Image (cartoon, rainbow, N blue to C red; front, side):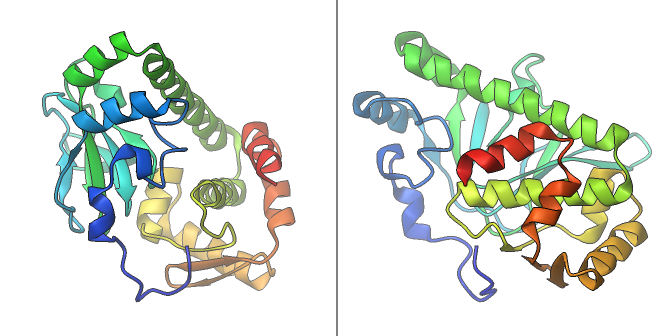
Length: 256
C-alpha cells in the first residue's frame, strides 16, 4: 500500500471481475483450484455494492447464510457485552474471510463493520457446501482456510497472554506487515484503517499505552508514524521483538 492517501480505496470496475481474473486468487478460495473449478466457484459468488465506513456486513446474532471474502478495504469484527462494551475480535484485509465462526451454531457470534470503503465477495454457504461436495479441491481449500483461522487465533492468544505491551504492539505491526506483503503491497509503509483506541482494545492495552508506544518506537528509530500512516524503518529489529511468535517469523522468512 502506498502512502498516497488520495488514491481511491476501491476500483468499482474491479469488483465485477470473476474469481479467475481476481488479483486475490492466490489468497482466498480459488487458490489450488483448476480453471474449470474456479469458473464454477465464480458463478455462485455474489458481488454486492461497496460498503461505506460504518456499514455492517452482519451483526452478532444474525442468522448465518454466507461467508464473505474482503476484496478491497478492511473490516473490523467485534463482540458486544450486555453493558455495551465492545471487544475487537479482529481486523480483516483483502483476501481474508469472515463468517466462518458462524458455521457451527448457525448464527454470527460477532459483528463485522467496514472501517473504510470496502468491497466484499459473498458466498452463500448452502451453494458453497453443495459445490465443495462435487469439487474435492474446493473442500480441501476450505479446510485449509479453517486451519489458518485456528492458527491465527492461537498465535494471537499467545501474544496477548504472555507478551509485554511493547511486544504486543510490535507483533501486531509485524503481522500487518506480513499480510500487506502477501497482497503485493509494501511491507514497510502502509496506512492503518483502525484507530489507536481500536488497536488497544484488540491488544488489551489502554489507548494511552498504545500512543506512548508509538511515540517510543518513533523516538528509537523503529518506525515513523504520522497519524494513520506507518513507515517501518528497522524491520530486523521489529522481527526480533516478535521472534518468540515463530509462525509469524517463519512466514516472513518464506516470503523473503
